[in-house]
Amino acid sequence: MSAGGGSGGSGGSGRDPADGRSVDVAIVGAGIAGASVAYWLTRLDPTLSVAIVERDAGFAQASSQRSASSIRQQFSSPANIRMSQFGLAFLRDAAERLEVDGDRPELGLQTPGYLYLATPPQAAALRAQNAVQRAHGAPIELLAPEAMATRFPWLATADLELGALGEGVEGWFDGPALHAAVLRRARAQGARLVRGEVSGFELAGDGDTRRVNALRLSDGTRIACGHAVIAAGAWSRPVAAQAGIALPVHARRRTVFVFSCPEPLPACPLVIDPTGFWFRPEGRAFIGGTTPEPDEDDLPLEPNLGEFDETLWAAFAHRVPAFEALRIERAWAGYYEMNLWDHNALLGAHPAAANLLFATGFSGHGMQQAPAAGLGVAECVLHGGWRTLDLSDLSVARLAEGRRVLEANVIG
Image (cartoon, rainbow, N blue to C red; front, top):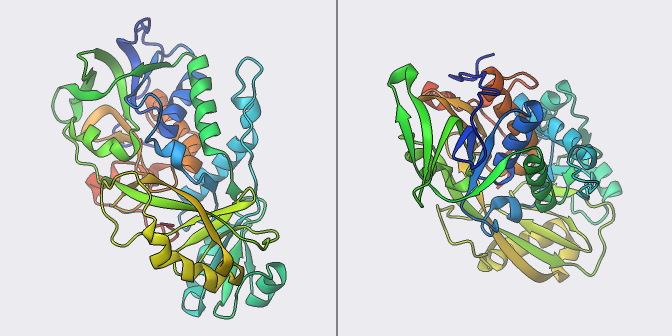
């Protein structure tokens, strides 16, 4: 299966990684996507020299540190279902996979499920998506309003036709802990973290022979490389532009609100309301959010507190009457690396440069999909194509082909 222009087979080229100036693979971005690519590369081929270039040394703005860190299988496209199934298995094995010097990460994985709610006009689509999910091994249960009212007595169901619950295979985890553990393990396996900002790419050749020879950093450092990977999250578009590639990945701010409620909500899953908002438990409190209107690019990473009073509070109280007495505790903001082409990940080799690959554009799914995406991109580097998972539907080459992956279940 072609990766869309990947050259592959670069393992063990003999580049000297001693100072990070000449490596087999240079990765732009040390967030969860870049860290995952580095982890898999150094796991699959320990002889590789890998450098991860990161400008934000403390990850203060990184989406990996600001994610709601949830995982689901309720997608409508098979590739997304497969990626999250792989991600769940990775999380369950993370303590062993990511152990370093006897220290095993604790990710706090909980799987009470996602509960998608549908009004009568939305029910047929939810049933159709459920059929796709079940056909690909996702055990998602359909619930009538009466069943939901019995199971979740705190939920208002009068205007609902259907619910879909993935108990046991969907939930949430400690995303920052996962990011730290993957990056630490990648470095323990030999990946080198380089502090710096990419300011340009050295390219040679034309057409099918065009290649990246090196990265240039803003401090003048040159890093020669056999392959380059752009995994810069919400900043991937300006990085790609330095290589002459137009990428439809935009930084879209999302505010996450933390609130308390005096009444407990027993067995509360992550709830997706038909109007688009979501909420879930977070310890003794709850977190939640929605898609802002208008949804603009590159807004400051400051929470929009007015969004709650203007949009969310009444909607929360309608769905959960106990939320009439909720209290806002705090809020934070993070970026979705929103792929405006089709709201799905952009993976693998780009046809404009044979050895330039991408792991970006996850549109809010990056934390759960990074383990699978990192493996897929690593296999494209090593073998020129997908091996473990067929992620060809999500190839970045689809931009040039004019092909969209239609995913009906996009949250936010």
